[in-house]
Every structure is written in C-alpha cells, then in structure tokens.
Image (cartoon, rainbow, N blue to C red; front, side, top):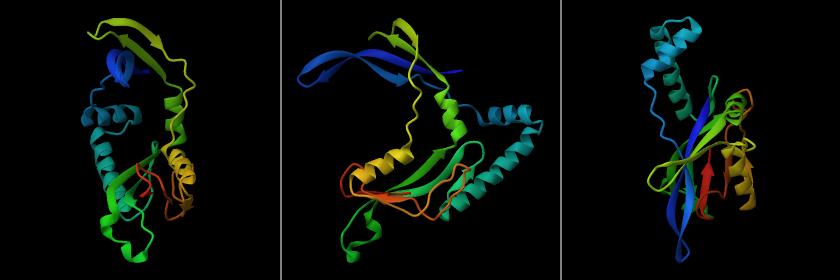
Length: 195
C-alpha cells in the first residue's frame, strides 16, 4: 500500500514576478462506503456485519456522550478523541465570558500503532505538467517523520508564554487527568487553545 500524491507544475506569483513551481497535493481518495467497512470487518473477525454495525453504533453513542462530558475517549485501535475550544485570552477576571470562545474543536490523537503505520507507508508521487500530462513518477525516500499536533502545539505555546497542563493522554489510550494545555497558540497572540 502507498499514499498517492500529485506534484503539478503551476505558475505562482512569488513576490512581484511569476515563477513555475511543482505544488504537491494528495491524490483524490474516494470515500469508502460504510457497508463496505462493516463487511470487511466481518470478514476479518468472523462476526456478522449486522452485529459489528450495532456494536459500532453503540460505541459511537458512548464516545459522543463521554466526549461531551469532558473526557478523552479511547477509540480502540486508532487513538483517542476529545473536544476542546480555541478562545481569546484576557487579563481581567471580569472580562471572562462565553463570547471569548472562537471555535470548538475535535482533537484526535492517533495511537502509536497508527503513527507507525503511516511512518512505514511509502508515498508515490506523480509529477504532472500544467495540462495534467505525466512527467515522471517517484517513490518517497523521506524519513517518515509524523507531525504531532499535540507536541507541536505545546512547543508553540511554550515559545509564546508557557504551557499550563492539567493532564494528558497516556500511550494506552486513556486520560490521566482533567485537561490539556492552555497557552498562547493560534493565529493571533490572544488566541488560546484548550484541549
């Protein structure tokens, strides 16, 4: 298996003059039908697709309920998910209000196994000209480094004024405490990410 990427030559305006550059984008993936997922899981497990669907629907209900109660919920075989918010930071207590929340977030933290699978998956790059004609194909030789949004956010927050943490995820997929990080992440110095 491999991840498919397209690098297509396009004219970009860099500064004041145009320049031809190859711009990478993922090749379009088609959405897999839910029935196909259950049928494939049934084949792998020996359990009927109907029973798997019923169990998955029940697990989905539990995950939504626990996540809205503030828990980091394990998604077996995948990682954990929780809800969080992005908001403006204020200095004074009297300025704290619900209007400071700018967005609600779904935070997914992949398991070590999922990260390893991605790291070990090759990337096939198809190079195209402006008209879409294939110029060449290459297989990636990159290190397989995985972007970790969890650690990336913490590093950004530490650079912008500190990280206040009330817990976090364990490698086993649970939550060791009641929080996440509060710091100066985001697009503007007043944005705070709370996971």
